[in-house]
Image 1 (spheres, rainbow, N blue to C red):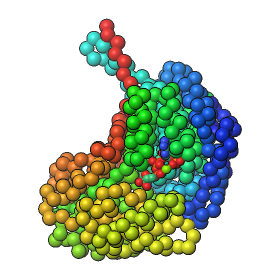
Image 2: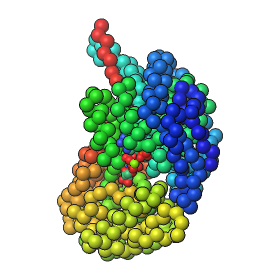
Image 3: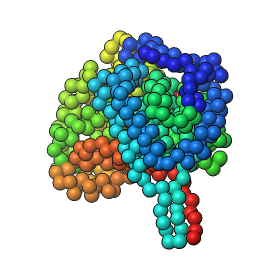
Image 4: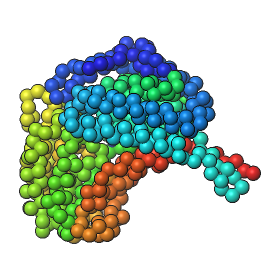
Length: 462
Ligand code: NAP
Ligand code: MG
């Protein structure tokens, strides 16, 4: 795989001040496929200075011209879509068709949506005798994870650029090559020097330096709740804006009237895709006691079919974490229906699609984010019980409700403490606000709500 040995700062690839490096590993065969710089505090500082210097010019650029750069960025991503999919497959391990259909295609759609929003958004409104201006927040520090490596970058950088902000990105150490490809696309799109900067590096070094940098106005973070909590605390102390997109333990609520086979099959696919490494995955399936055994058998059959079709998880560390949870589920007394902690292959960080039945709401596998191909099926007695279980975690990112009657499903969804609910298998919408209730986060990404995160308002009175 092609890897730059520099950092993209102020419009060019430049050597890092730090001599440290990150080896990028293919999780399917454990081979090193590239090496990138592990930037340090001095590199983050250089990138923030470039972003600060570029801010006045970019903020003053007419929205139509910012929209034109975003259209060019979308086009540059389209031109590289095969390279993007191959790179994500190489460093994340997802099967190539999934990388093409999701990891490459979704960010292209999101970049396109922000090209349109930048052109259409009204950055000024009249309120009585005031004119309210929507101005860019300033320099954005973006810290992203590896699970949807390009999507999570674009979901921050595209609205930030649309708003007139400048950006320093610290991507996940496991997937820096995708981030480098994105920087190349930004460059090709003619985005002015310093508007976007990339510092590859380690979380506790480059990530922390970026989150703590006094000249960063907004920190936008996606990742674990543990790190998000720290970043929120640092931002709070400095009175700077923060957006946190954290974990989830989303409920797939199958009401008694639902088409059970469809709800279970779509539910299993939702959990197993991307090897379970999706923050919004419906990792808890809630089924009425009367149809419980039937649902467990359907889920087992569906999961077994995934067998070898899911890729590995991203790293040895992540595989150890997922195996630990599977062992914990067994120890807690849940019934292992299929899968288990053993590796299905000698090489690569694979975990078998795993289904647990007889899971009770207080078990760790029903409360904590596992981030692997592991589904927990819980029985409920009645609708109130289902609601209590669905709302009974610290998280609230996503969810699903299935019922014969759409209105019945919607009535249940209104009572769920969560940021998104798919009704009877509703499709992903790249314009719908995405983000968490409770400890799943602060703020919203995507669409007009995502753009608003990067704006601050000023009122002029006449
Ligand atoms: P993570 O440590 O929270 O990583 C997310 C990003 O934050 C990465 O770029 C990471 O850098 C960086 N980071 C780590 N420590 C930091 C610090 N002290 N200050 C600033 N930035 C820091 O998540 P992870 O280790 O990749 O995954 C652990 C668990 O988090 C997963 O098992 C999963 O449960 C959850 N997770 C959730 C999401 C989500 O979309 N909500 C995404 C990924 C993971 P490094 O890459 O160098 O660590
Ligand atoms: Mg980490």
